[in-house]
Length: 431
Image (tube, rainbow, N blue to C red; front, top):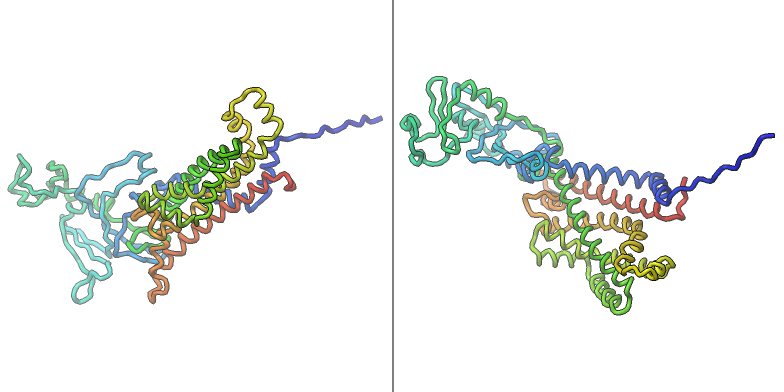
């Protein structure tokens, strides 16, 4: 006779069912993937940008408003000023200053130590409309030269040979004065080799260029860091203020609850965008003002949520038991009540994150958020609006790409918030 064994029922933690409900929601998972990708892009920042200069500001007005996929050859002329060389971490966070100024050219020829370039710049032509050509010393393009008066340099060897210029040649040898005032020596062969390796660059602008000739893809990538950074700081401030005031109102009640409710009603009655603009003007235009303004105007919803939940939870028996054991009010709130609000708070935070990104874009569009040359998606849309309806049709990509980035990231956070809301709802069926 076969023995019938009863199967033991398997029990899982609540978190197990939350994760299972969430990952069975494919739209929420898609939103999470987009958010994670955006966070990776924002974290890497300058390391993955085609233009890694601070604020992706290395451009040329002669290649402005070029369409996606535009390619150009640039002459990179060495700047006559010292440039700080950042560490790996500094480059990732703040970018690396360029040692060159860039000019689009058609071709170039090198004759001994002389360089002749043919420009392709719009509006820069000869009288017969032929491309303009220019000749100058090869060493001035390759090396960073001294820009002051040579007579200010003491003990300058062979001063008469320099003849007022920061360089001169003797056969194959070339002598020049660097930006620090030191006399250095090189050869014409070395100059030609260095020029072809470092001073000629072909660039492809995958998303085109803006009205100042800057790479749109680089500025779009850096704009991700601005949007997520403002959302993160704004949410942190709103959670800090909202949880603190909501906890005080819900736990103590009475006059404290009445006063905080009165404050929330006042803030709630003022349109958020108007309040954000007033705070931004008071704190000054810029990213810091936008950070604080968004945080100080989005705490009411969190405070109302925390207040309502605490008013219900504080009557539970385990809270009464904690009081009977003599635990302090601070410990009861932060150790026994707030952990039970983790799920609703996560849902509210994701929703506020999307709202912060959208509001920041609106502020930057109005010129009250990030200030030039700092790239912001809202500011990029504002720069492109001047070309709407123009006969040339140029600049449409200035609006399309940042607008799509804003929509995609806001949609991702909303889908993530909806998925978290359903995941923390025990009534949702687990497949």
